[in-house]
Image (tube, rainbow, N blue to C red; front, side, top):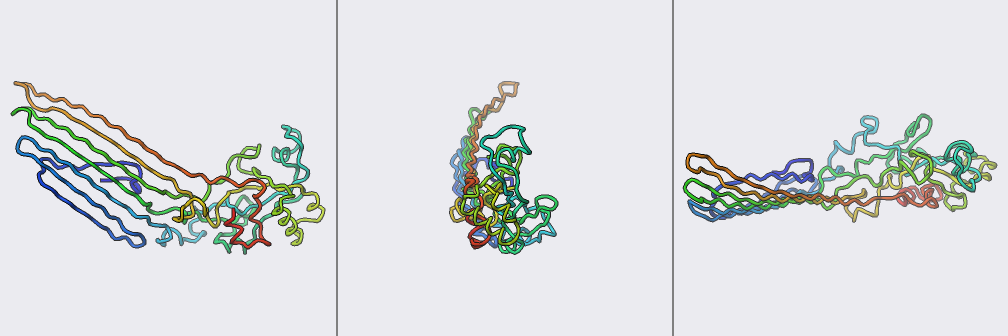
Length: 346
């Protein structure tokens, strides 16, 4: 019997039968709409007589992946009804044009820590998205998404998770019961369980909450010099649209992102191995247990002696999606790059 969400926690309970003799083979299948179903095999064997019995069993259960897109209640609830699975930390960002970058960082010399690291601002925040761009990639434009007055293209990360992950559960059990004397019985059992999920999907990338910038927190951690071709094209575009003055454009030596996530809209196409656009982890939990003992009477005294040993291992292997280098961190700009290509390229 397996308990727990998706049964990846490794809790394995055995319901045993005593003094079984014979052989039983079983199988089961459960149809689930949207997945390949749940199925398994089992075998139980036993030999013995009135004074001794040896029984063993082996089982395998498989749960198939069920994606959130296959259930209306998970991914078709509008943002206005349930904003919980939406995040303002995305790969569509607001960038602050900065002037000459200081030759070295001097604590407390001028302005804020980002000013001292990247240079003082020469214009207001420049967004690399519009409401139209945001809608095109399935986002929701929130004029106060980052904070009051600073918009964000909210992205829904729930589609990158699965309701049920692919999961294999293996169980093995053996026990020996024997009469030592008419008044003394011996018992020994050994059990093994393994819960394994090759891929447990999560978000396409985690938001940057610290570094690589010197300042603490999630803001202004990335910098792209104005010589970066993407940064240069973005600044030229903003000037053409009248969103930054020619003087400010000429004085801009680089851009720093207010907030940033390497992968969000469009997902992460690199780590899912064709099974999804989030970042998967591998879970492998195993447990061994052996026990034995004597139970009976010695003369007028009841006697009982038992010992047991158990060991378990739990391994979770994660693949982390890191942020791009600062020289490529504005490659999500609007035109001249197609919106879909620009979003998924990050």
